[in-house]
Image (cartoon, rainbow, N blue to C red; front, side, top):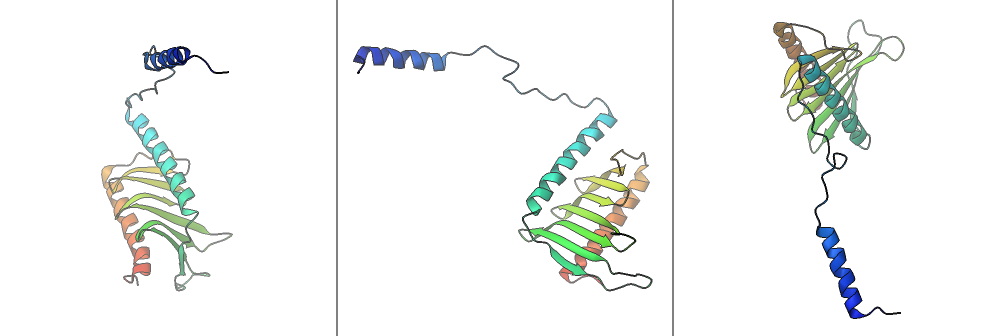
Length: 176
C-alpha cells in the first residue's frame, strides 16, 4: 500500500519539526560539572585517583607489549640478581620494573614515565606521584599522603630520578 504523496510530505515535515524543536533542559541529560577541590586534601585525593586510573590504563595497554628484559650482575652479598623489565612505546620508556631479590618473591620498584620525566614510582610500602616531573605526593602503601616537608620531597625526588636513570642506563648503554 502506498501513501499519498501529501501524506508522506506531511509526515516528513512533522518529523523534521519534531527533530528541530528545542528540548527542555534536563539535569539528567547534562554531565555534572565537577566542583573545584576545596582543600589540599581533596586536591590530593582527586589527583591520586586520576593517577591510579592512568596507571591502570597504561598497564592494560602495555599488557599487549612484550617488555625488554635483562638481569643485572650479582652484587656482593646478594643471593640472586636484580631483574629489569622495560616497556617502550615509539622508542620511549613508558614503564620500568626492577625486581629485587629477597625472601619469597622479593619486591620490586616500578617507574612510569611521561616523556623524559617521572610520572609515578612505586617502591615497597610507598607510592610517589609526580606532576610535571616534580614529586608532589609521597604516599604510604594504602595511598594516604605522608606529610613531609619540601626539602624531604626534593631529596626523595632526586633519589628516585637517580635510581630510574641508573637502571635505564643499563638498557641504553650508560649503565655500570
